[in-house]
Length: 215
Image 1 (spheres, rainbow, N blue to C red):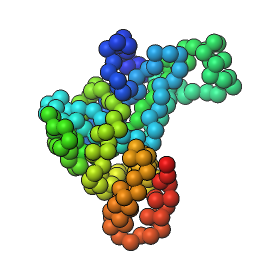
Image 2: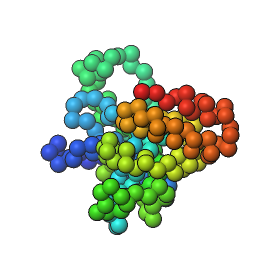
Image 3: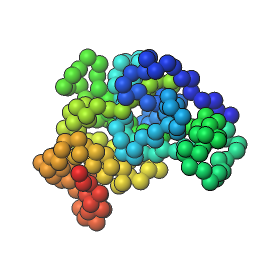
Image 4: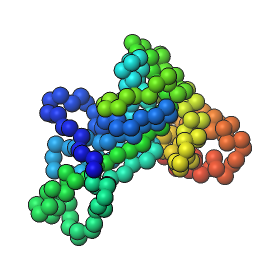
């Protein structure tokens, strides 16, 4: 039986800190969302959203894209069952439910940033080490995603994530960047051309990915 993550006082949690690494590997990590301060379920990070953690051995910032998320009981033996209640009714009549569920997600590592670098120092390949167990996980800031996405090698990495819907994952990651860039068509055309090279003229697949990108 898994126990909930220890919760700290609200004043100690940094902005955008929403999860903690509970399993780590060379190319991805599994994280558990921290319990909210209010009586509700932990917010599940959006599919294709950008997150970062840290490798404390090197101080490298590790960047990743969320490709799978689940909410399930902490007790792995017993499954959740339908109760026929609204969230408000659950809060009033079954408040213990919120402490019995956990939200976890897997994120594919797409690069890292060297410590002490501001506008430079980004690398879009597997870092020497992933983040360690119990490291904090943060949502990325708009500015760092924009700088990171000046290069597009991360798309090749996303297309190779095992057991993930890679076309939808690429589309979601590009869509978020496109929205953060406020509809920068020049960047989108650049991304589309790079994708066409990766997909080796598979027009149907490219069309499906690009059709999912919008403001």
